[in-house]
Image (cartoon, rainbow, N blue to C red; front, side, top):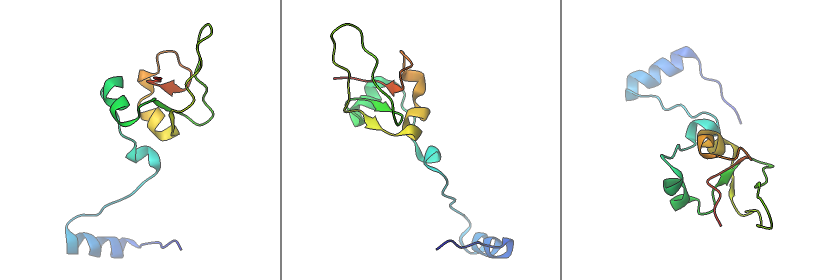
Length: 91
């Protein structure tokens, strides 16, 4: 069930508590990591957007067990060096 709050209700909550916590889409909650070493401590095989496939060369098998999260990938896509939709992929 969705509720809509009027400006008066929000002002009352602000006056009563001093703060308002606003939750937003998943992108707002996605953590940015400093580097792949830090990301791989939490997500051992990397993170990728939905539908991504690890790009490999030669007879190397692609990583398929990475964490699938578009929001998390978008927050850390600077670490996707080969631009295949999977950041910090690791066996």
